[in-house]
Image 1: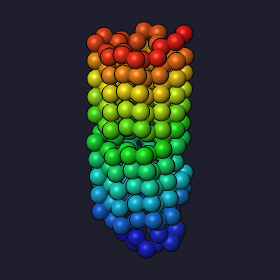
Image 2: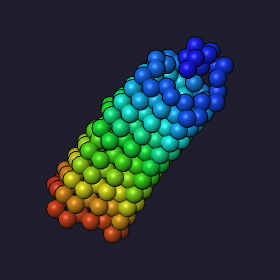
Image 3: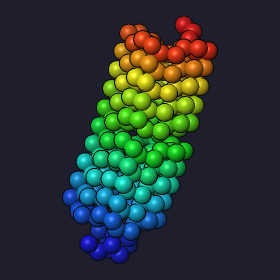
Image 4: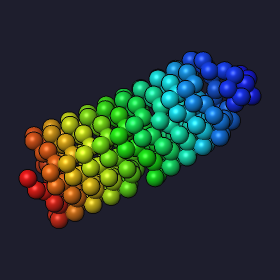
Length: 210
């Protein structure tokens, strides 16, 4: 694969391309078609992927720290990827696999994460305002201090999740599974709790208002 040509913007259609372990750090890759591409282990640190199509792409262990990923990542495999400080605001991550991904200080406000696999992921203090997390698997996830205000968590799996001091004001939690979850001092003011399963959940200091 001609990496120099990709960096120079001469190649825009790379659907299904094999770019495993390639160095594309700081590259300008906006609106690039990478649907179904293999990017396992690739270095995309601080790369610009605004508007890129990564539908079904495989990014196992990919380095994406500080990258602009406001892109289409529908069904993408981001397992063990480093997304620290990446910009994923409004990104399409429906059905994506984010297990064991690094999401420290990642921006996910308004992101579409319905049906995504976030099981056991560390989302401590992450900005998820108004994110679409319907039916997402957040079992055992660390959401300590996370901003989930106005987020849609309808039918989400949050069993055994740590939501200590999380901001859930105005969030839609209808039908969500919060069995065994830690909601210590979490703020659920104005949240929709219709049909929520809170069996075994810690509600000490939790703010729940109509």
